[in-house]
Length: 128
Image (cartoon, rainbow, N blue to C red; front, side, top):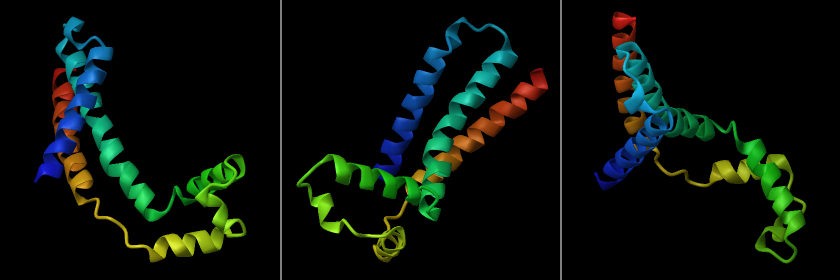
């Protein structure tokens, strides 16, 4: 339960910062306010839900392998150098063999933020 509340607070903080950067208090038109609120609640979904889901599917494995290879070459004597001849296939197989952590709190909180974003989008189209 604590993980859900921490993630929700971080999402609210992200939404609040977005609204502050877009000068939400200065906006007077209801349609514009609803659009900004929909955008503000879509961002945590994109961070918590979609990005974690895509990463879990392995879409970012190539980037991870490339960054690890770059760090291996830039930092001599690091523990990353122990796997100098590891191919991409071996890296993927080793990564899939590891037990993955459950990202359910991130996905569920992201889904709640999506519901709020959809509500604000509906209100936007009713006013616009």
